[in-house]
Amino acid sequence: MADTNYDWAYSLVDSSRVSTFLISILLIVYGSFRSLNMDQEENQEKDQDGLLSTGTTPANKQNENGPFSISGVQTIDSTQAMFLPIGASVSLLVMFFFFDSMQVVFALCTAVLATVAFAFLLLPMCQYLIRPCSSGTKISFGCCGRFTAAELMSFAISMGIVFIWIFTGHWLLMDALAMGLCVAMIAFVRLPSLKVSTLLLSGLLIYDVFWVFFSTYIFNANVMVKVATRPADNPVGIVAQKLNLPRAVKDAPQLSLPGKLVFPSYHNNGHFSMLGLGDIVMPGLLLCFVMRYDHWKKKHGVQEQPPKPLVPNLTVVHKLTYFHCSLIGYFIGLLTATIASEVYRAAQPALLYLVPFTLLPLLTMAYLKGDLKRMWNEPFLAPTLPKYLEV
Figure (cartoon, rainbow, N blue to C red):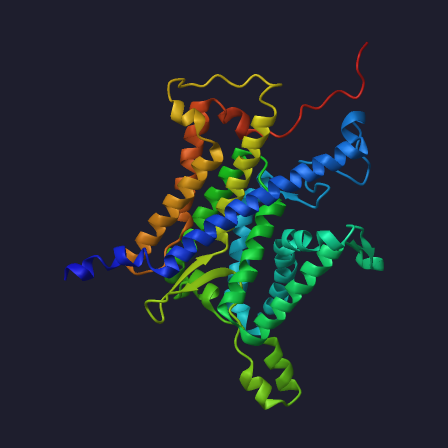
């Protein structure tokens, strides 16, 4: 009886749970560093082009904090943050009601996105491997653009992985593609302020709770879980069926789309741990924002007078960075969500635990350090100078 009562505690150290914890945290950390590195490379290019010294920007390049930066980064504003949960709800309903008729479209679109995202994930490794034998010059492909040898190598490897996944449907390849999607979204999507972060995460918390807990009462099914776990027919099998190749149709496996991370247990057959990409990416965007703010604050700490801390005696709080605070909160939130799912033996909306444990400590810490006002209102925007200066 005692062993049964503590089964949930033993399950926390199961291989599937440990893998989920480690991989999700590593993806957030790596994606945040890639985002910060992209900012630094972009600023170096601006310095080399003389943009910072002249104070002018070419017409085809927008401000770093505008809708699109030079690197093609998307910055979410307040309006988009408020409407994103609504758009996600509409997309979820479309997949719930029309999945059978549109599953091939979903599979092909996912394969294309996963190819590009996984190539982005592999790019640093390919650059390191090909550096000794490549000058870094870009090769022109006409209307398709110009690419370096490392970019072509990463794209070729990514296409090979996607093709093997389509033909085998192996969970490990699906997880690899999902990891690429996570890193790409964290690196290319930016939150400009703590206000936008709070709006986005609060709305997504309500979205997650509703579709996991309350959708059953309206649609007689858990919409979130059903969409996340529903496999899609293999496009190879459908083409083989059109060509009257019965053996190929039989051998083509169904595909579990890489919208989640799945890790099977090596101790309990049939048991697996699952975490949606949104539960990694959305808190990851917040952690990416605070990492960029930590770096910005450290870089500009000499030029600007830092705000006076409201509680000067809390040395631990003032030494702790915002990124480390949020990362610890993410770990505790993920641990709490895991315990809740084991205790109640039911799917849990992970953002119900992740959002409070990451956002509330961050807001409290920013208030104690005196940074809350600056972080709330787009801290990275430089003050705009008047077009004409009086002499």
